[in-house]
Structures are given as structure tokens and as C-alpha cells.
Image (cartoon, rainbow, N blue to C red; front, side, top):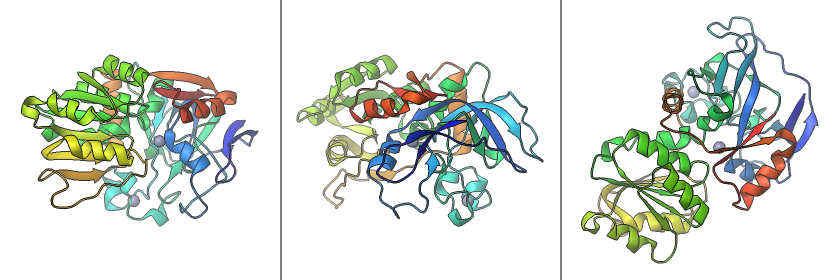
Amino acid sequence: MRALRLFAWKSEPRLVEVDEPAPRPGQVVVKVGGSGACHSDLLLMRDFDAGAQPWGPPFTLGHETAGWVHALGDRVTGLEPGQPVAVYGSWGCGTCARCRIGAETYCEKPAAAPAPGGGGGLGLDGGMAELMLVPDARFLVPLPDGLAPVDAAPLTDAGLTPYHAIRRSWPKLIPGSNAMVIGVGGLGHMGVQILKATTATRIIAVDTRDDALDLAGECGADLTVRAGDRAAQQIREATVGGRGVDVVLDFVGSDATLALGVAVARSAGDLTIVGIGGGTLPVSFFSMPYEVSIQTTYWGSRPELIEVLDLAAQGLVRPRVTTFPLEDATMAYRLMHYGKLTGRAVIVP
Ligand SMILES: [Zn+2]
Ligand SMILES: [Zn+2]
């Protein structure tokens, strides 16, 4: 079968012929219906050095995958061949306190995980292939009726990651509150929709690109603001009494976006850094409004994936998807690198 594989850090992936995987006991092989191209894949190809992660190439890319059950290993119950499923992408040990509640992103025994701190497409073979080996049936979530694998694929990361970040701030997203999404790309455009679908907050979206702001408007943003020198003032003035934004979700994470976030944050608000842009934010007693909580989040939990799939099956959120065949996957990454993609690119083998 064909697979898009990364053979070394700081190199372009190559489409090659590999053996079809066979499931061992407890494992499942999924016939891939779609696998999303994520911005973090660009980091794998361009930025990571040997030793930066406990795992490394070679492996097949694609950590955002859905498809159909293709082959079941011995002892797997509750799944049927042909059944549509989403792959939960962060593969932990399965037995530590975090994994037991489904938060495998924060596994506390990574040495006992299939790939320490990684998963399929992140150290082990992912979904940019015709078939994908999933090492434990618990990583599969059956798709609810009405949701096709190609639409479900981006929900496993571009949907789940903002869902997790938003969900933890729900108590602050009450009627009369303001939320801000910085960066309306693959994750941000889902973030706007998830805010709209699950809260009554007023949604402000910020980006440097006009087409991204148009997309934010289509996804339900109440106000779209072009990033720049006047953005902070414009955003603060748009909140009642200039009090600021209750929940800032930064899907970029650069020096500039973090500075904007803190400039518009309301006291006792949340500033959540989701984007891995590598920026820093000086924190001191006087550098931000009182009781602003600053946190990073990484991906989401298995129960949250079930919830976000249900939101999509109800038609309350819908990823904007552009599909590419496997042979054009490198073109999709190039378009992403140059900011030319709208929404999410999904590779369909
Ligand atoms: Zn990702
Ligand atoms: Zn664990």
C-alpha cells in the first residue's frame, strides 16, 4: 500500500510503497477515509532536531484520522468490520490516573505508551496511508450517524483541541461575556464554531488575512478584527465599558499574539495558549490584569472527542475541508506553509 512517510527530521516526506499492517491481539487496522494535514506536521518536517522528542522518524504522517474498521485483532470486541470510526490520536499507557479518565495527552507513564508523548503520525505510523494500524481498540470512537470519515478526521485534532480549550473555560463564557479567537486557521475556525454552538458568549476573531476573517464571520464570529497596531484598542472598545475579553484563545502563540491577548484580557479572565508559535509572555505582578489565568493546553481527551463528534453529527459544527489525494499531500503542506489554505486540508488515500 502507499504511505506518506517522514524519513528524517528536517526533510520532506515521501510517498512510498509499504507492507500492509496486520493487527495483533487487541489491535485494529483502519481503512483510512481521511487524514488531516496539521500545522504541527510542518514543525516535524522543518523545525524539530534529533532528540527534541523521545520518538523520531521514520513514520507515516497523519495524526488526525477517521475511516472504517478494516481488520480486528484477536480479543477485540464491540467493533465490526466496515464500521466508521475516528482515531483518538494521543496514545498513552492506558493505565495511569490520567489515561483512566481518557486524558491520554497527559499520560504520566509515557515510557509505557506505544510512543512516549506521541501516537499515530507522531512517532508511529499515522493515517496518511491506505491503512492504519491502531495499537489498542480503545483509541477508536465509533462515528455517530450522519458523520462521514472525511469530515470526522479534522474533528480529532482541529476540532478536539479547541473544544478542550473552550470546555475548560465554560464557566467564564456566560451570557454577556466576550471570547476572542486569535488565528482563524484549521483550529481557529473550529474554535469559533464551538464557542457559538456551546456558549452564549460574544465572539471576536482576529487574523492577519482577510479570507480568514471572512471564514470567521461565516463560522459565527460577531466581530472580526485585522491584527495590527490598532487591534487591541478596537477590541477593548467593542466590550461593554472597555472591560475586556473574558476568555482569550490564542491559536498562534507568537510574541505578538500573546501581547495582544494580555492587552485585551479582562481581570479574572483566561488566556489559553493553544498555538505552538514559540512566543513568550512576560509575567509579573503589574504586567497583566488581576487574576488572569494563563495556561497552555494540548489536544483533548477521549470523552471530549465523543462530545465533539456529536456536535458535528448534530450539524452544530462543520469543519471547512479541502480534500487532496495522497499524491498531492506535499502540495497541501506547501499551501499551508504559505497561508494559502482556507480551513483544513484532508488527505484522502
Ligand atoms: Zn495536529
Ligand atoms: Zn498513562
